[in-house]
Image (cartoon, rainbow, N blue to C red):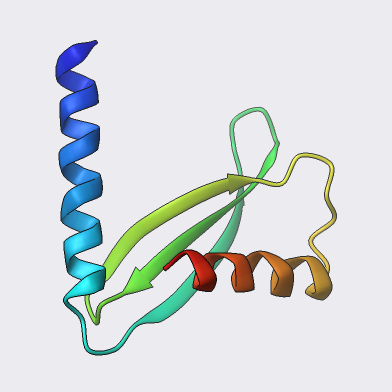
Length: 79
């Protein structure tokens, strides 16, 4: 729906402005399972107020420290 798309774009712009305008940032992540028992990782950027940044399905990937470090580095590079 067009209205949902506009809201999604506006929310993305709001989050981007918060991140760009912050003097310090932090990255938090937390793993969950959805209702189909599929693993997902949620990422929150602190600006210093927490802002939801991204949800990532892990599919068949095991949540090892190497995988988590790789994903967190990718998020940091995005920001």
